[in-house]
Length: 377
Image: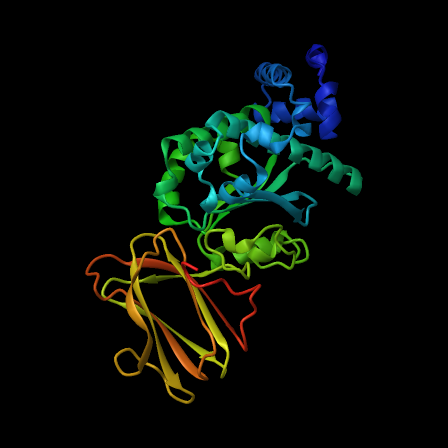
């Protein structure tokens, strides 16, 4: 700490709420107790902060920092803070399946500006740590991070996206060490598990140890509930706190904001789902595939009977829909009371299985604010 006196750490600890000793120790932990390496790292961080006037950054308009307006960022880079975990750490969310770096660049941003927007977010979060520490009367120095990969595909793994992700890893490693408490990457498609081998090489091993890749809700819902109280957890992920956005805009979610169920439909096979619908009620389905398309149709049978393909009335013709990386959504209104069979057909594929994520909504009558319009409407 004596060596740090010439770095004017007080200028930077004012916003974070940590003491100069806390800041110095954080960098010391990041360098495994090596004093010389920690000092070099901290001095470089202070120089970077001065060069970029980071104490002034949080007051700037988002559009000035990112080069696009907030609505566009919500559409193509949704990230937000909502609630605190049981340790008092802020819970941060990113809908990674909606992060389209190339689209943002085409609309006026750039990789460099998006990286500065990431810094802007980090500085806002650091201030959040300070306010939480003051509120609890004890030091809170790390975040709990949920990254939702639902809807992510290799189409998003572009050169600009790679540059952006590596840039974030470099910035966080050099300037925000020891800030990550835990990260769950949920709803991971197989393609992301493969690309994570590349991403993890950009991250400090100690940080990588705090990151866990998880599949569908059966793998992560119980973990989130262990860490975050239901009143604090976003309803999109099984909690009771309403999301601060239109959930139906997120990849893998319907207008209700509830997560989808994921199933694997084997080659030369099908997946069948029976749904009871009341007389005059509605039936809404929403589904997407991880890769490739799959045939879909709906059959109907009166109450007391079980519908079956080829034997029951087909009310929605079985045919292929473009579902890879996008959602197929439709609603049947004023339904006849009885049982409906939602049928995903992959018999035509000799070798390729299909990973399908779906959600079904049934009710007495559709509520226009809750039920998404038919595709193409």
